[in-house]
Image (cartoon, rainbow, N blue to C red; front, side, top):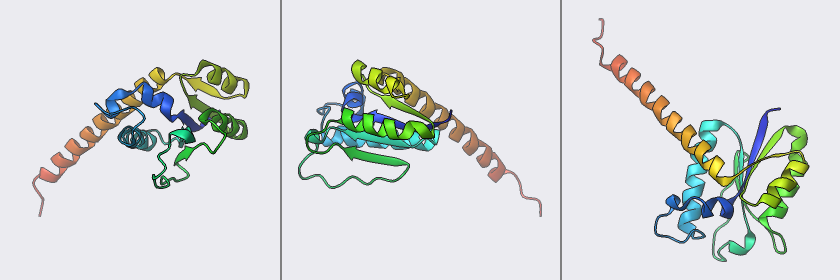
Length: 158
């Protein structure tokens, strides 16, 4: 079955990826923006839609609504909900369309997702996967750029 969406527990992943905002609190706006930037690039490299889900209680009151698309959405859980509640609901709805991968370090949440028919990965596993994909993408772009530069610099036949 094809992977149709990756659901990411935002604060769980931020807790495991301090390099996204060095010297800043892991729940800061800067850390969230760093995570959005990296996951946007990963979405572009992988072609798999991503939902980045944060606990609503961590959302700054003055924050603007995040810009979301069908391919990359940023969600905050509502009042009385947790990110886990949203992840479980979305997993339940989406598994009929294909494989849903949930990224979290919450073992109970991973077990729940598996029982719903989804797949689960730890944050550490996912960070490795993202870094490899972005490294491969960079390598591919360098190769294409070098080839185009050679083509551009060839003498023209007139």
